[in-house]
Image (cartoon, rainbow, N blue to C red):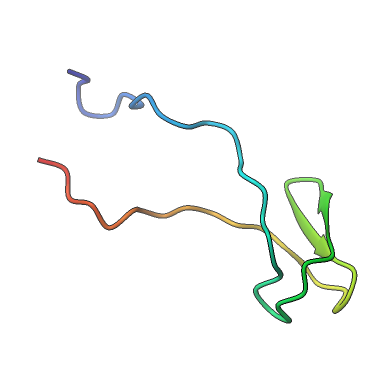
Amino acid sequence: MSEEGEPRPGRTRQLPVFHCPYCGDEDLVPEGEGWHCTSCLRTFTVHLTGTGVNRP
């Protein structure tokens, strides 16, 4: 088992985003660490903060 503070194994790559959270369009382009929507001209990032599953 991992000690407190050690990273746990898991998915490390970023999965693609399928639609813009602002306008809902699917015309997205990866840009740096985030995504750029060519329809509404917004750039955003997606960060997973949790899964809703409690750890024992």
